[in-house]
Length: 412
Image (cartoon, rainbow, N blue to C red; front, side, top):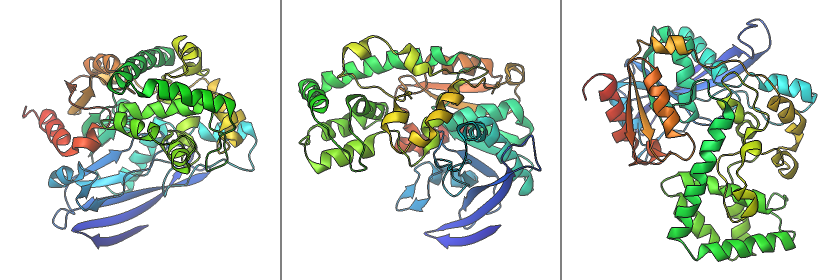
């Protein structure tokens, strides 16, 4: 099903596709996947660039031109028409909520079908449905993980592959990943309190207040110290230090503080997939067994003022009312032995022109592992830079995408 509209100098074509929940059982349960095609009026026949969003559990950006948003879109439309894919379970694709009416075992089984490998299978289904021979892909963050899985399992469908802040490790255990991200989080805390030294005693006072008082967020949940600490996830963006500081300067007992503390937290019920299958994104043939909880350094227990980052903990499914219905399913998924996502032999023989922006100080995707992966993918050209944080594509997307296109095509 397709619907075409014209708005602000863009031609938008909406597509909805029925795909199998489990691509290994094509005649089984079906779900829908939504994709929005974006083109300039004169570019509706250009090659496709498929945008694979970060996450897991986040839908694709919605395009505007006031000015162009997302920022990389203007550059992309010079060469392509862009397909913005709402990854399965998000946006206008069949959404994943709390899965009422299912047993925990049924919930867990259902949720095993929402990793990168399933998204690749969706993309291939869509490519064939649209009659496209090959197309290019741009993967941001988790979308880069999906892009690497694409290169592993269906490279014949790809013309080019671009990665921004999303080259995952191949075969490494999730424990190695989270140990590295905790080390980087410790350094990011040090930098934050060096920039805003007055915030350290203020944060310590805030934790003491939260321990003594029953402080409720607008959704009715209690704001606990460990829930507050998760706002540190924002420290991995180019403007994150300032956003955190401006939150902490508010009176703690004000409605504005409670509202912003809730809205700035990375995990909530809007996209439960982000919390429930987050660790599985790094499970290249492993069970995660609550990896971040197990490898968390002692410093985070000894110093409550330290913020945590993109780390999922089992206690969240007790304290977050919107995640509580998936508590038992999350525990089952933590014990699930996930299949491999990447084929090192296929990647070692890769023939798809590829380029990756690797952020040297990325808080979420350890750059040393990304460099290791870049060396393992034949023909992939890596650009290691400390000019950007993880949100580089949002901050300066036109320049970054322009450079990656030139690199993949051998022009620089």
